[in-house]
Image (cartoon, rainbow, N blue to C red; front, side):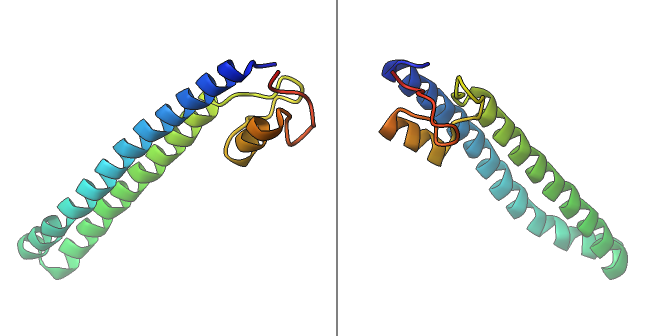
Amino acid sequence: MYSRAEFTQQTARTAAVQSSQERRLAVFAVLGGLLQLPLIGWLERTFGGFAGTHIALAVFLVYAAVVVIMMVRMNRAVDRTAPVCPACGVKLTKLSERMAIATGKCDRCGAQVIS
């Protein structure tokens, strides 16, 4: 069982991890997306329409895969730092976290989470 102060610290730590990961993801997604525009033009001028388009498609797919991997890592990092119900072991994130703050209980099993 968490004290209110411990629970607040834990949720603040989770929010900080999420914010940091989201910032990295946003920077990479925006810069990576913008940098692809001149790359596509250069590839089409250098390799021609057909080959340039296929190379650009491969670059985009790699970019998309990296974005997905970053999102998965972000979700795992948030899950690792999220507070856990002492009774059922469920991660208290999002709505569960807000319910625990409001009621002091787990929204899944009803056990007391905050004393």
